[in-house]
Amino acid sequence: MHRDAIVIYMPDHGEMCFDGSKTFGRTLEVNTPNEVYQQFEIPFWIWTSPILRKNHPDIVQQIIKAKDRPFMTDNISQLLLYLADISTPYYREEDNLISPCYNIGRKRMLMGTIPYDEYLHKK
Ligand SMILES: [Zn+2]
Image (cartoon, rainbow, N blue to C red; front, top):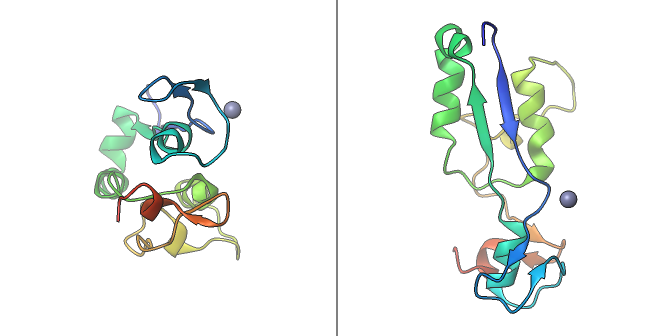
């Protein structure tokens, strides 16, 4: 890679794979914390090109600092607006994962009604 580049990998959902469950695939039902975890917890990767790492070490540091922050994919647009340097009144810094102002206390809701972290006993 000879250009500034950032690649973000983010699936839209997980799949049950018999990891302690009696089934596979997706039910999108809230039956057990294990089944919810398999369906809703997803990998999220950000890769940067060597040139970007050299030209923008500040962005790389912001990404590294954010690696363990709780996140929901509904705010991916805020990260993309920031990385693409797009100015819009729709940008909300507190919802940008790599901003120092990111709101790590935002309640992550499952199916709009169930507090995700509490249900999975993460809090
Ligand atoms: Zn899908």
